[in-house]
Length: 165
Image (cartoon, rainbow, N blue to C red):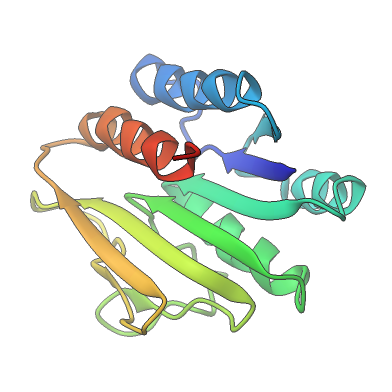
């Protein structure tokens, strides 16, 4: 069993990426051996509680925008439980202690793999440019000019990465 917690960003109701994240949740729920829920970026406690309910399941965290910072915090909070991390155009929050100068970040040690989908277009606000590279992390640039343009391709790639072969 795999449990996937999908955490939206600040503008979670924006139609463009809400449909992508909700669509990903429904696709995963339709696969045998998967359970998935979607949370707001402000639901850190609910995400942790849900992961506790699925304590025997493999844990996967998917975070978009500010939800990426939440996923990093949640991964640290559930340590030493291993988890996989997928970040979609993550944006650091002021509380994000794992963000380093240059807006790269280091996932906690219990994260087995990290994939960061990020747009290549210039942004007027700080965002994660890269995962601090380790043997268990990868950066995937996606051509796009806005937050929404990255979500749909990233959700498709996340679904393919989790789909049984």
